[in-house]
Amino acid sequence: NEKNYTQAVEAYKNALRNDPTDEQTRYNYKKKKKMLKDNPPKDDKKKDDKNFIFVERIDWQKWLNFLISAIASIGKEKLISSWFHLNIVGDGPDRQKIEDQVSQAGIEKFISFKGKLIKQDVVDEYRANTIFILPSLAEGQPVVVMEAMCCKLPIIATDVGDNKNVIKSEFGMVVPSGNSEVLAEAITHYLDMGDKEIEQQGLAGYQEVIEHYDRKNIANQISEVFDELIQNYNKKVL
Image 1 (cartoon, rainbow, N blue to C red):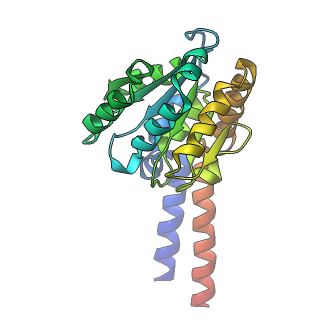
Image 2: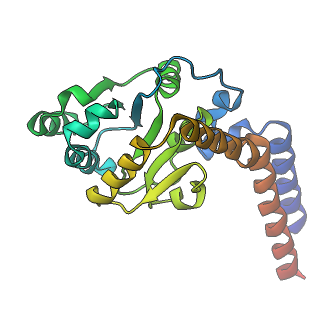
Image 3: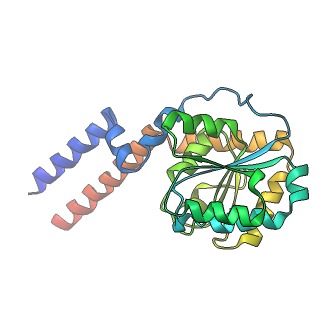
């Protein structure tokens, strides 16, 4: 009945306010919880290095083949002069295909396959790199984008899922999915960007996560949704 429904929703809201962690699991925010704390300065990279990082399962949905094609199209001279390197963190059914593509393109020295890592090692990889890149064909709201922002990395991602709603020009670029030419332009844009501007973008992304995507804010947003549901339910009953 109406009374039991309202009491159940209120109890759930109170549980969220007191311990929103369980809801974070549902929304895939639990993975980034530890990285919402202040991160130490990223002093483990050489100045001028442009180390890109991809963190995800290596399968057809992530469209790494377009990323490899984009990198190859930039040309070895530009990659060398810009100190470019891509670190691929993750494993999956398409790994061998991607490794073969890298070999055929002759760009092996610019790309490292790190395999599947434990969480802390993934965090260390984020912090050791400069720019995060995600060329996916399809996504929901990628946790890895939030993780990279928590680690103060600018973002290059495709316009799928919630990417275009989360990623702002102050700390990243959103490009069309499946277009290696535009992806190459985005990579080149960051290769030509100065260290100071990259650092500023990383800080802007970090601040965005802290202000809008920490667990308390998410719990409050969920609570507001339930308030609206209760109001709409009461209107129908009355």
